[in-house]
Image (tube, rainbow, N blue to C red; front, side, top):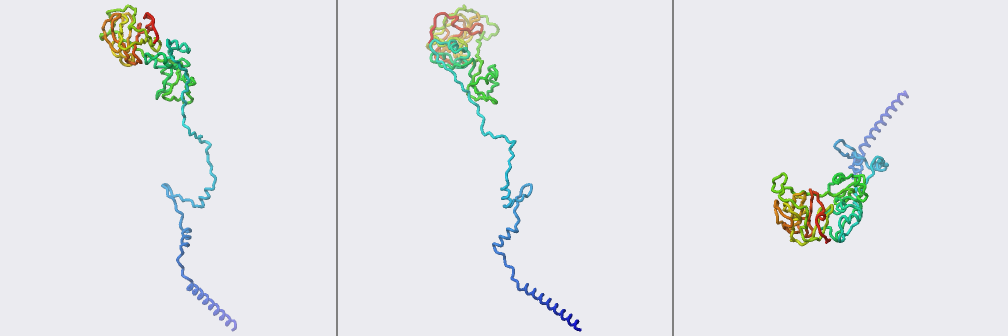
Length: 361
């Protein structure tokens, strides 16, 4: 009987404890405060934790931007550069050296001729022309006081033109490239051997070619062999009264220049037929007004730089006949007569055929 009472008592006690526990839980829930709105600082903290890291979009894929922590980590890593196969940089532009010549000069004295001057320096008269091309272009130029460039070796001083190459220059002068490069003062450095326009290089062993004009061998345009109506004597007289020599015959000047006032009479040196009487045409304009007499025996005489022509092609003249007046036409540096004698087109020294003394002017 006592055991039944104890069991009933314990059951009631457990039931009461359960009711109390449930009541306490309900009270705690009912009495808890409402959830307040987060503060601004809490929002910022919460956004830092919850917002995903932004990403950078590319045309191929989306690449995540590394975080600040990762960037710091990467910056502290060592950098390795592999440049064992890279070329050493050279910031300089190649610049060719300029020719560095140191030529002698010679001042022409009274009575000197190109041959005398060339012999003095152990060079040829052709080399004298090679270093002073104006001697061939301007009559009356070799006068007292004229200054000449003296090349140290036989050759030609060539002014480089734009577009020229060593190959083209060597071909023009019929020499080898090695000969041009070997002359040290030309300063042609390997591997480029670059030429600089408007500079001068010396071409050893070269010579200046001369323009050779052949006078007409017929008159009247009939063609064929000319039957000359008159033949010269083969002996020549002076075509002018002056004997004042301003330039003698030499390689660069195939005649003589005789100075005298403009307008002086010019006479035929021997009998013959006029084959040319006009301004010298084409590349031969250097002669200015020109008269050519064919003497019918292989000889021809030429009279250049005239101010006046008083004959015509086909006209027959005799030795001493008046044919024109001296002048300063064409390429000329002063009034004078340029006179040539040719035998079968070979330009010979007129002084071999003309008698009497001459003087230097």
